[in-house]
Structures are given as structure tokens and as C-alpha cells.
Length: 309
Image 1 (cartoon, rainbow, N blue to C red):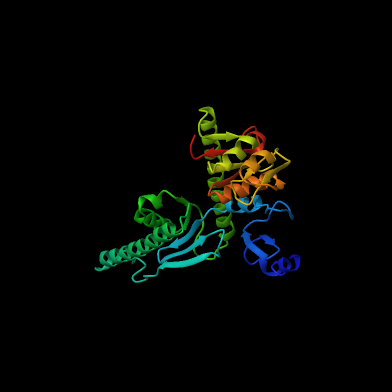
Image 2: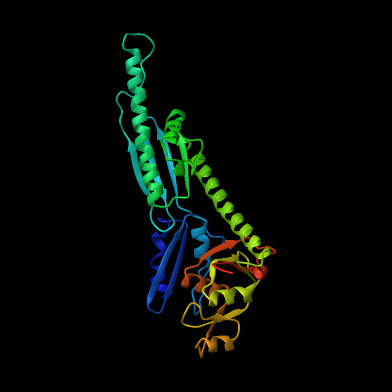
């Protein structure tokens, strides 16, 4: 198994700075790449996969578009955690592209033609952005380039997509601004991820305060997972809840004690780290999983927003 994983390592840097692999006796089961360096190297061996690091990779890499525009068009890139980047060029109408200098009987007409060319290019760029954002369910569009082109593109975008746009500095030409643009993109992606976490914790506190759609702590959360009741599983990035949990063949067959699992028909449950069992149950029942900062809530570093009370 290690030899098979080892064969993936030499070329892994081409797809990102993180390589995550899940493997078993039958071979490699899943491969995931992340754009950024992981906090540390990690290897786990156990009866269920340790999926939380992969969850963290995906959570930190929401699908987003980057757009570098000028008056001839734009370079558009779709960034996805699970597939290579997708590049598209839009626009390209270049006649007439430049307004004439003042003077001459045809000045106004040529200037208007140039303006029309810019608008056609902007419309084409906006159409490509809207189509790609919709098709790939992008959460963010980071736009940079010529000021006039950026204004026209924003104006041409449909409102739902225009609401995803963040305008930053940078240009389409290779002028040394690429690093600053990449940093600005990373800042906006991080801000989006942080807002998502804040919103989830706010919703969790609200439901917990109403004694409604929330489970707090390992015992309540495992009980909710056993009922396929969890909508979003919340796991602290440094979970205080240690120890193990028991599990059966089915995702909902989870608990802390053998008795309840026996009632579910599991005579010989397996044992694995609590967090890994909880994540496996969440994934197996169609729940989302979110990594949240360690703190007072959820208690013990494990909680859930529920589908029903």
C-alpha cells in the first residue's frame, strides 16, 4: 500500500502543495490535492479513514473565478479543489479599439465605434463569467484590470453573479502585478471561508439557544448521527473530545457503548477515533462537515446543526 502511495508523490506538486490519499487493502481509494501547504505531514492507520484533513482542504478552497480584463477581453480561470484549473479567453474584438485623437471630421464616429467595441468585448466577458459561475457554482469572482473594462463588465453581469464580484488591483499584461493579484485573491477566498464559519457558528448558537435544531457535545451528536438527523457536522480544528467511538457497517450505526449498537443489529462493533467515526457517519448520511475554530462551542469540539428538531 505504501509503495502504491509512494508512486503518487513525485508529480503531486503539479496539482497543488498538499497531497491527501486514502488507501485500503484493495488499493488507493481516493486522491485529493490542495493548493496550500498543510500545517504538518500526517499519516493515520485505522479501521475508518481520517477524513477531517480532506474536509479542511475543501473548505479552504471554495470554487471561485479569477478574471484579468482589458478592453480587448479577459482571461478567466475557474479554480476548483477537485479538478485542474479551467482557463477561458473571452472578447477579442479589436477593431476599432483605440479612440482617435481630437480633430478630423470622423473623430466622433470612430470614437463611438471604439466604445462599441469595448462594450461588445465586455458583454462577451460577462456572458462567459456568468456561464462559468453558474455551471461550476462559484462562490466568488475576483476581477482586476483596466478600469473602464472592469466597469463595463460589472454593468453587463446579471445581478446574482455581480453580487459575487470583488474588484482588486492588477492587470492582464505581465507587468509584475501577478503576485499582488494572487495575494488579493487569497485574501478574498480566506475572508469568504471565515464568513461561512462565522455564519455556521451563529446558526448553531441560535438553534442551541432555542433548544431546537442543534446537538451539542459528542453524545448528543452521535445520537443525532445515528438518526441521520445531522445537516451540518461541526468539528473543532483541535477537538477536545478524544477517545473512541463504536461503529457498525452502516453509517448510522454509531455510539459510545456496545448496548445501543447491539439494538441496531451490530454484534461486534469496530472502534475508532471519535472524530473519524463522526465524520464517516456524516458523509454516509449526506450531511455537510465543517471545521470550526476550537472554543467553548461546540462542547468538546463536536456538535451539529440538525435537519429537524
